[in-house]
Image 1 (cartoon, helix red, strand yellow):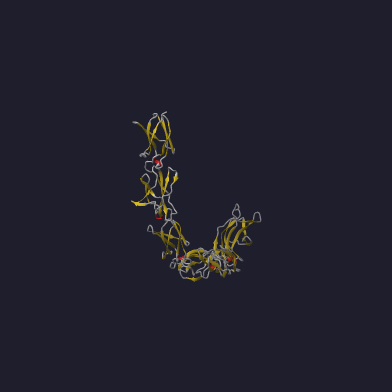
Image 2: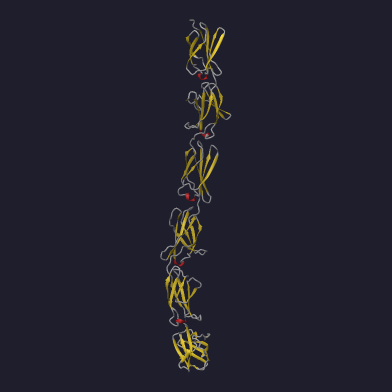
Length: 608
């Protein structure tokens, strides 16, 4: 039994005098009833207490006559577990004016004793979405008002303990239910006194859903033909998973392979062995969750590489010189290139006795060796190396690079210059010396302004090459004296088809005496003059610088130097002579340092 005590609250305005009032209004709960009791404090005797009016739940009223100082009354036929309100008002007889007057109203509320409700019924799912599931049920048919709340618990068969939530309504929205779940649900009514009534037990199945992708996908143990994959169930809708689907393919292709699904007792929910696969091959492995109706989750992709087997060298390599400085290398390793991490290609120069090697990562069966030299033998080798560093046998071949244009000769000099020959010397080219098969010498007569014929190459009889103090010496002969020559030297390739850039020196041959003038004779004679004519010398004409004409009479000798030598036929008059006198005339051709033989004529001047 519960006794509730409330302070009195005045509902009407207090009169000027105290007619009498209620105090200590209390309620006592009973089975389907509530007992009210209170004390009455008398007031103005002019106003006699007539009765009490009791208003229950603002719905119906009853009158009670109780002239005593302490009054008690029972209000029955009340609903259990429901709060009821009571307004108690004293009514007084007005002995002066007649009629009745209401006193101050006192109010209170209370509950009838609780009765156990019956079990809820008709549990059902009314809404089932991706984020939540809403359950609904019918309230108990007996004493439904005694239900203050419902305790809803749910669990899967594999769950050790249920999860519970509370609601004051006959519906509840649960965020913790997974799709495709078979849940055991209980709904228990709870009274205001926390007493639990009989529960409703029922199994419900949540909606179908698309499972999420597998979690924690990892590549496990691999061999040269099998890759193991391990993974856990999806976080999203794991109960909707019916199976898992694999797609396994090389990085450049997509091919389905068989797999064996194995339940493991290690830290992962599942693992599968995928195979048979190819050795030394990188694969892309994708795994999806498959729902009960065939829905597919997003895929999780991992890359893995099978282990290698022994490396296989190609059966042969082909070497093709494509220029004096490049060699193309080709090989075929079809079907066995999967375990190739890279190739080691080496080339050995027979000329300079050095070997160069290069790691070739992505050759596709060909590679070009560069920065070579022409006219040289190269030994080429190829070795296969696996990703883990295992070397195959080495395959070899050789070839010769074609000839290349030699570089120019070095430090060309004219060492000895004579009147009809020039000795030149030079050092061998610094570029492509190995391609030099000989030398070509050209002589250009600058004074004649035209090329002379080439003097030949090494091996011809009219040119001699000697090696002295690491320099090549050659004498160019058959030249004209007193002549400016450009001597050009070029290096020839082994075949003679390629010539280096020309190096040149310009020299003038030494002086020689020209031959005597030709056809020296008298053309005309007068009393005091003699005119001569003659022709240029036939030999060493370039050395001719002047003619010397000397004439003698008795003991007197005079000389004329004639420097105008531009004409092939010369005429010259000697005047100022004595008439009818005999003179001896002498003519010679002069060079800078030498003079030809004299020509002499004895002639008289005219006497008339």
